[in-house]
Length: 96
Image (cartoon, rainbow, N blue to C red):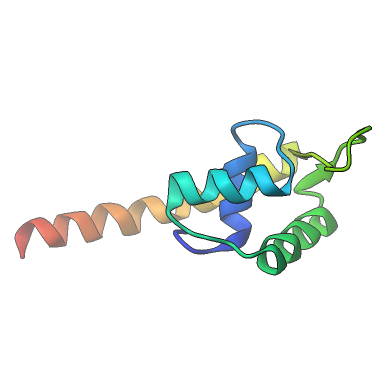
């Protein structure tokens, strides 16, 4: 997950609605990953197509996005799938 743009965008939006630049700065803060605009907006487009996020109407130039229930469920599934890997890797590191 640490560098998967799709999961990073979903994780950012799990904290609330954000526009693209806010997502980029949030992701850089919590994951230490600097997503370029092309990577970010490519991930946003894919997530919108899948129904995992939706664009909100705005009177401003920047368009905010919101995590949908399907997006929340997908993020939860992905995190649950990563848990055993993190647990096993942590255990192995402690033994090393």
